[in-house]
Image (cartoon, rainbow, N blue to C red):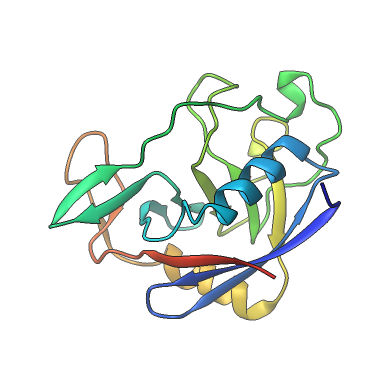
Length: 173
């Protein structure tokens, strides 16, 4: 596995988010993400949770025939962060940082991830940050996405975008 990977998230409207993923912070998270990118797992997934001044989350759901469907996932990875016994992850959750999403189970991450749209340092040591945006235009796109209108179509989906935002593809550069 490489130490660094550059990827580009291409949205359905062709806006782009360029990221550098660094294995030194969270090697299993990076390895898992790159595997999913190579499998085209993220093609067509939507951002299903957006909270202004916090983060934009994606990686688990898609829309087909006006129905929200969940991607099939049958594994989890170990959480690579301090409160889970992994002390090498020193990447702070600030604007543009990508991190693995999880439930209350510290080892429940699989495919979902979020990108911070603000300084979220309270997440440091609790979530597996594994990369960051590489340019101001990418930060601008993250901030624009974080400001879209949201609603609660179901108790499990608060902060759901009114207009769907999907990933066309993620390119490994």
